[in-house]
Image (cartoon, rainbow, N blue to C red; front, side, top):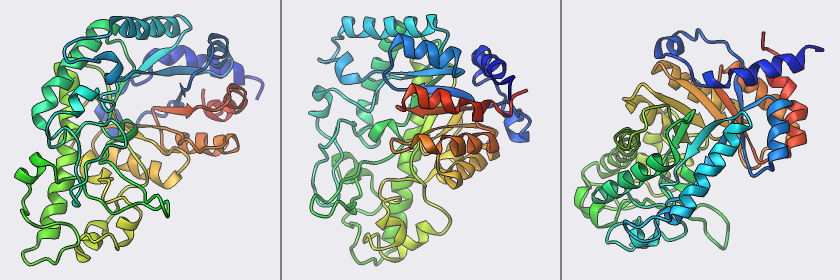
Length: 377
């Protein structure tokens, strides 16, 4: 193990090739490179330097949000944008490649106040718990998001290892969710009843939980899930039209719907009593199988947000490989330092392009980096 530091340094020096792969290589599983180490969190320059030179971290996430960048429609906060550009330059000078999130899922209030710009559930309640805009059904507002992205890339640049996309809560590919304040459990809510969704639904007048007379549950759920998959592809196309031609990372949350879950939910008329609905996978649209199969752009990486769950990462990697794509992942916000050796073993076993460690102490990351570098060379 005496040559570990040199292996880590070599991994860091290879940061420019963080996502250098071809679909053919991904399909064949030809790449066996050690997953690159990425960092997510607010660290000092000294900590970032140590994470890079000693821990072998090659990539760092820079995030911004739409509501700060465009506080009034068509009017941008140039100082905020300049601050993001400065941070990117500073981290680049420390040796990092930059992964980037433009924060389209955190929309400005002026947009959210427009008709149909927020989600509405089957009870007629408008979702206001966070700032994600309803661009799944409010397609008339998508041009505003693309215009924002054009401004961002023109100001802060386009030289990113990946640009993250998902468009839902926490930037992931998902519909909203709400918890019952009394029990803390997930409420069974389907967010497809705003003015635009009601015009597009294949089951007018029917709501989840109602009796089915004409196969409404299956028709509704197929449309509901397909709408999210279509939104995924629009987001990627929007990055392209805004001027970013590099790798797009689509964030797939949680465990995800698996074989049979669609039928289980439909069998109970989407009443929220089937096992996948109780877990919230169905209502939130966690159908990675459908979504990854629908991908059309070859410059996409499948991004798992639960790196410590071995089954989830293996599942996503298999779906990605079938499409000729690579996979990357990040640890969840509840991952413990003691889990890092296992997390890094999962990353190696599934040939991840990169593994991001989220908001853990630099000493814990550096202390465990040897597990990620062990297979190098």
